[in-house]
Every structure is written in C-alpha cells, then in structure tokens.
Image 1 (tube, rainbow, N blue to C red):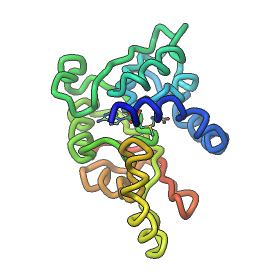
Image 2 (image 1 turned 135 degrees about the vertical axis):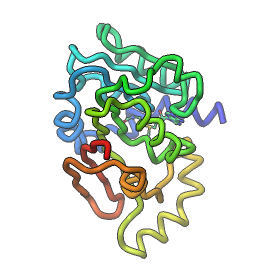
Image 3 (image 1 turned 120 degrees about the horizontal axis):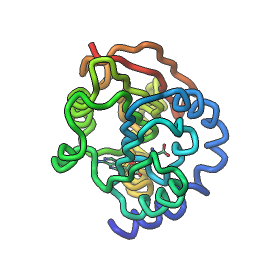
Length: 202
Ligand SMILES: C[S@@+](CC[C@H](N)C(=O)[O-])C[C@H]1O[C@@H](n2cnc3c(N)ncnc32)[C@H](O)[C@@H]1O
C-alpha cells in the first residue's frame, strides 16, 4: 500500500499535467472567490493552493504523507494554509474543526477516493456554518450504460493504480441525497463524466 501511495504522489502532477489545463479555469473560478475559513478535503499535492484567496484561512486535510510532502512545498509562502495530516473521517479531526465553523468545504477529485463518502458528507454537514457552502469538482459514473459497464470492469485495476480512486461513484447523487441543494451545478465531458457546482445546506 505504501509503495502505491508513494508512486501515486510522485507521479500525480506529471500524470495530470495535460488534463489540468482543461480544469484550470474551473478550479480558478470555483476557488478564487471563496472567503472565510475553507476546509480543503484530500488536497493531495496542493494543486488548489494557488487559487485560494490569500485572505482566506485554509485547513488542508490530507492523509497521505507522500502527498503532504508535495503539498508542503506548494504551501510555501502561503501562511494562510494549514496542512493537517488526517483522513476526513478520522475522529481526531474533530479536535481541529469545531461544529458549524467552516464557510466552505472544497472537494476536488476526492469523493471518488475517500473510503466512506457518505460519512464524509455527514461530517461536512456537521462542520459547515448554516450559511456555508460545499464546492465540488468531481468525476462520477458515466451516464450511458456501455460506459458505465466499462468503468465497472476497469475499476478494480484502476483502483489499485490510482491509490483508491473509483471510476464508478455517483457522488452527485450522494450529495443531494444527504440534503445538499445545488446553488448551481454542471455536468461536463461524457465518458469520464464530470460534475461541478456549489451546494448549500437544506
Ligand atoms: C486524486 S487525489 C486529488 C487531490 C486534489 N484534491 C486535487 O484536486 O488534485 C485524491 C486525494 O484524496 C486523498 N484521500 C484519500 N483518502 C482520503 C480520506 N479518507 N480523507 C481525505 N483525503 C483522502 C488521497 O490521499 C489523495 O491525495
């Protein structure tokens, strides 16, 4: 497991390089106007850090020490970013995050990976202020049955290669089922289907 985590962290940025060009504008417009206290879930190598408003306080949660080492270098010169070496469902995180204390929770390419996304979404509900928002940029299960089936077949191998990432999660549905309402939402690309948006509680 450690070996895969290490390799994933090492090759994540170069592997994503071309794809990140396509996501750049979306990340920027999603993240740069958020103010207050932000909880960044599974921040990985810290790709989001350059987009955050320097006046926002960012709690960047990341369980992989290898990812965290990369994130640390991207957080240099950004004193508003605090790195926390936890998984989002670890009970100890509750000593760092008080209920109803967070203005925005950011999930980018992470609900596909975390072990219990339902539990994570319940935690989000607990930590967000009543006026808080959930900001999402995620890949989800394809729409067409043929693409869905291919993703189901490929998923076990992909899951190992991509350190726990799943191609076949409908996390858009999970969010809404848990009681979040879209302020706006958008689906884009088809085979590797993406979902983005902002959600409020209730
Ligand atoms: C595909 S990467 C995405 C990184 C980053 N959010 C981005 O947009 O580039 C998924 C990240 O989720 C992290 N992760 C895995 N399990 C997690 C958990 N239980 N809680 C928080 N993060 C987790 C992984 O270590 C990895 O860094």
